[in-house]
Length: 315
Image (tube, rainbow, N blue to C red; front, side, top):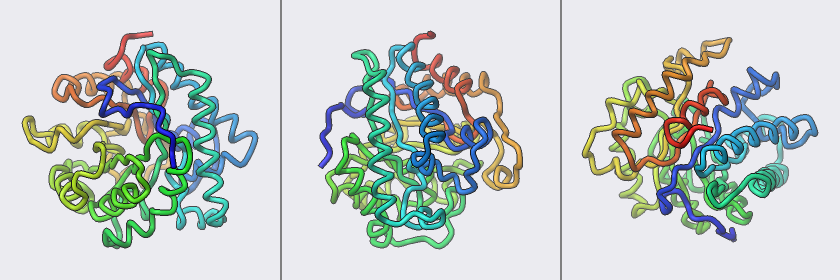
């Protein structure tokens, strides 16, 4: 069972900065060939490990310079059974890669953590299917059975929590929350939204959060939005809506394009880092309790610098 050394973001109230778009940075800036966004495979080569260390160190320094916390998300978004099998990883190899991903985060935490910049380690979990298209929905029971192994492996490491990113539907989120509860592992649920501010299934964010909370007795420690630009969801964040208190984190895309448009792009749309920082500043004014902020697809150190300036002192 995990040894929880660190207070989680929803308890401390402290701002926690996170990283940017790991996979898009590795592909478009660092030149790695990751057709399925399988960043976890870099843990198996010296060149890959060097790139991952450089990536996380850059953001850890950024958080420390601003006197805010840092959330270390493991590069394991694709390290689940079906995606792992697509790139030739057995269940045993995936188990090992998840453990070693946490070891890397421990290494970064040891190097950069200070009393002003606590570093929480989160095991990143991805959806069984595509991050943009819900496809054939699993039942909550099927989702629990699918995700329980990866969550159990992460729970047995020194990770402090798990975060399920880019979820397209509430049944899978329910299954993940149940699997995490069975492993006694704090879990965060992060939904992706379309340009209309709704999940790809058409469900509203408020409805999805309510459904997961109702089915799990409020199991997730908090919720997030990721892989959507603020222009897609700003209007969906109804001021005063009770479910908003459950939303603690935002990791936005750099691009204003829809998921369908991004799927067709052959070049990276990095958007406007300064504009993104301004939008985060406005979100902070509206949602002062949101204290976990970072980026998703297309974002890099330029975007996170602007987001960091919106949520912490400048370096």
